[in-house]
Length: 194
Image 1: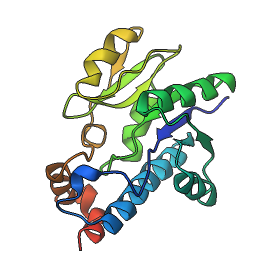
Image 2: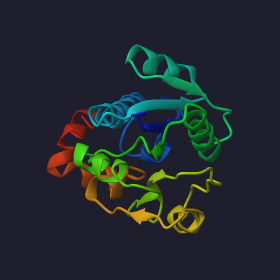
Image 3: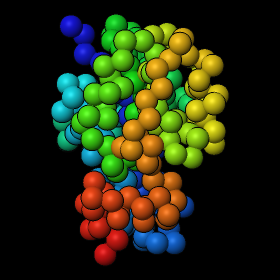
């Protein structure tokens, strides 16, 4: 059986999560970005998915390699291009693919099993109307950003929608970080706010 590729786009650790700069300093945001990506990639690996880190950042690529995750250089043209690059790589390898965001602090193994076990197209929304996970049996045009769930939904073939806490809760704002921190599954984030 060909493994499913969990395509995890990561822009940059040092330049990521700028909207959190009012509550966490540069070094903390770098460490948080790395920890969130590791959290998602480790859970993907525990589900027998192959985590593929897609990035245009050399620091992220080095981290992926030293952590034992394959990485793919993207064009640096944003999240849509990174997702397309990762999906195309998986299709060339004749593998199924899931685009999984790297900022899901409450993600559990059961969450990824719920999406990876779907036979056919699948999409998981984030709480703000974005898209946390997306998988399709064909190439699609990606349209990430605000309200992307509604853009992606009609581009999929009879998709299964999976709404679970670990998929709904991403970290884009200080309030996202605060609510994750106060959930039992997100208590591990505390070390990045000290």
